[in-house]
Length: 74
Image (tube, rainbow, N blue to C red; front, side):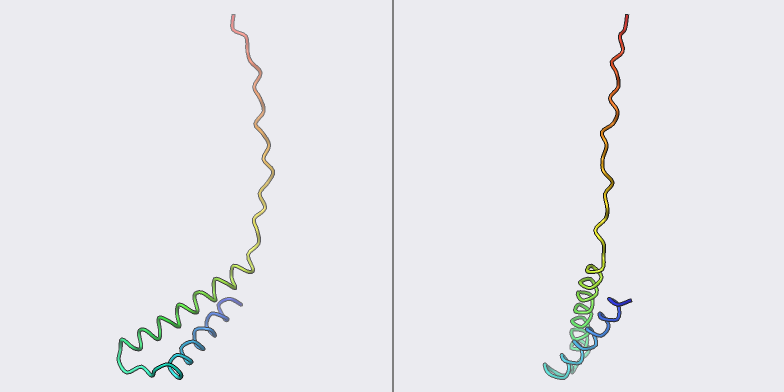
């Protein structure tokens, strides 16, 4: 939930700053570039925050398999 909210806010902020300060979009391609940049920023922020909250998996200790006793064949 936290990472989704942060990603949405970062994407919206990126779109706003890009449209307001860099260049106002004039065509469909301009809008596509602006939106893809904002989406990319949101995805990066999402995985950075999501990965921060992940725990390191606990691996159970490995025990060697029991040794089989050699059998005598007569």
